[in-house]
Length: 219
Image (tube, one colour):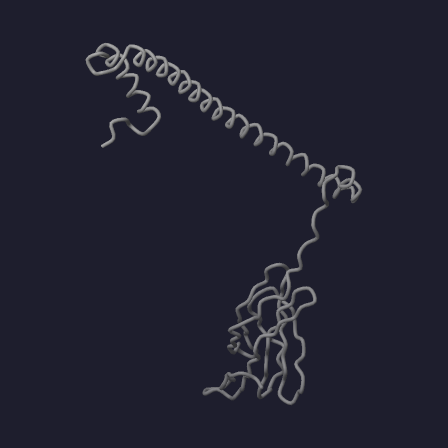
């Protein structure tokens, strides 16, 4: 175990406590008057330096807090001024305002890119005649859906309607068709992403009416 503590404060306290003890019994413990006198002076110098350092640290902390508060106030006020300048430029449709204020104009919006592909397309029969389609997808950032249909005997799909919902009731289905295929397209800007198509087969239901007899992926 060390005789003298390691921390500055504890070391200073050790010598402050021992200096008068050693001075009172200098010759008894083998020290000279010159040595204990020098020790007392050094202890005094160390105490002054320690207190000055503590005061400096406290002052530094206080100054740091003042600086942080001042910069926070400046930043908030400056940000409000920049918002005002930008709003003025936009309201007056005058991009020269940015050059005059020496601040950059707003960056152009980043293109959102292709929309998410619609998934889980499903169908159910609507009485007395029609098809309800449901699917999963996203209409974020301006996306929307388009419903496409192909009747039996047709080579190509035909556009039916756009919607921002994730369901569609097709009540314009011609009566008496034996089958129909559907797919859903998601649109955003110039992009189009299609779902997998489904194929429906119709047949008379027991007791009258019509039912969907099969549902699967369209070719």
